Image (cartoon, rainbow, N blue to C red; front, side, top):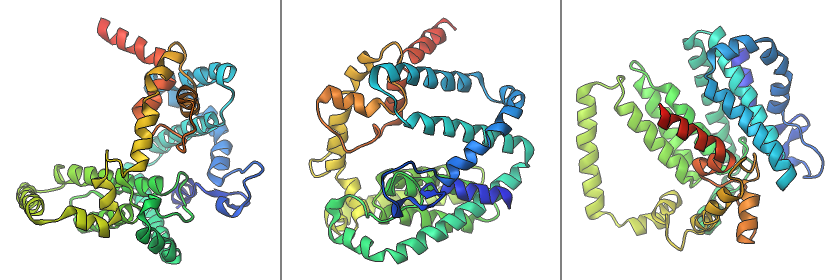
Length: 334
């Protein structure tokens, strides 16, 4: 139960020690509950440091050291970015996860994650009922991109939908497949209501992993493949996807990928154009945590609404340029 409570507070990323972030003014320093829990856990991490060095691979430690080094160097070049604090807190969360994995049985951890996701799913659906008017407004005005109302997860609709989709994999089992289908359907529904393309794709990947896992019998897998192929062929031949997309905004955003109507994707394409120059600028140290978009804005001489590159590989590569090159050269020698 203690682990479930901790995981719930970790999921409630917009809950500060004085209330919900969206109910507070932007001025002043906001300390979130999960951040406070992680800071209070630092002594535990220090005390268990020997066990952590034994079970965490060396490349993880190299990653931590280089992010800190790159950010310190980036401070002198680009100025301090508070996102480094979030990186350090994420490292603490990872270390705590390792310690939980060493101290608790695997079944207990999976059960705690399942209870947490069910609680969060219930909270998300209750929230959607409370803010149903905002959802209706979005479906009437899909140009907004996403429905906007208070989110439990930091980062807006995309992150709320993707976090839920990610944790649905813990419901995969051989004996309770119906529960996986139920949770998966609930997660996919959130993805479509939030019009989150990345969450839709992640849910599809989750289903793919489940159907090709040992949890599904061979005849079930074959039947699902046949039904899937027939369904895709029928849909491709007889469904007017443009008309359907006008009714279902989540599908519409998938159909608009790469098109001029997709303002969000067009903006990211423009953002990525500055990527090679950002690599050149920070070739020896990277640009540091949180500095990727500001550097690209400087390259393009334009302000972008995004606060990250929306491509994790580009984001990390710009942060860790020289380290990545050195690792590649070392790998060639092997």
